[in-house]
Amino acid sequence: MQRWIRAAAGCALISSLAACVVTETTHTAPPPPPRPNPHELALERYGQVNSRIDNLGHRIDNRVNQGYYPPPVGAGLHHRLDVIRQEARDMAVQHDGGLSGEEQRVLNQELDGAAHSIGG
Image 1 (cartoon, rainbow, N blue to C red):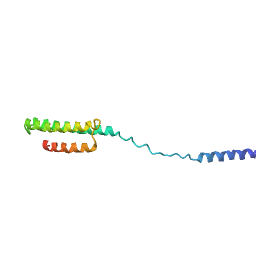
Image 2: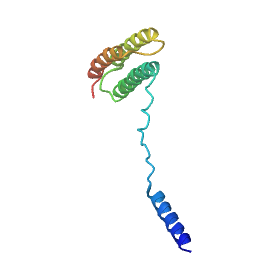
Image 3: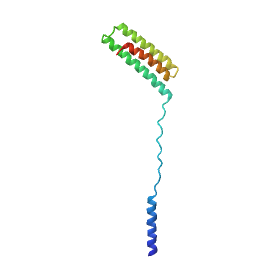
Image 4: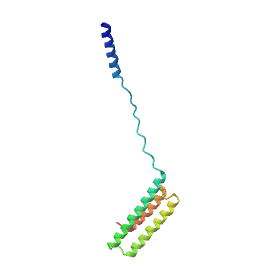
């Protein structure tokens, strides 16, 4: 009987020690987000420039319709935007339909000048 009690106590001791063992989990950082494809970035830049040209074209139309300047002035401003759009197309042809960061910067500088001419 004493052996049985010692065996039961030993099993209880071993099982309590086993319950105390902590399994170490390793926390790994989530993988970094995938880097955007350079071609996709170039296409996005081209789209941003075209969107800005479209917005400026709408501003010209609104200002002509509101009488801020006559239609011939509006036509001249539209021509300026058309020239910038053609420059963007010519640049995009060299990059499979997109723009480099430097090209976008140059086009945005031209668009800044056009926006200043259009007014608020």
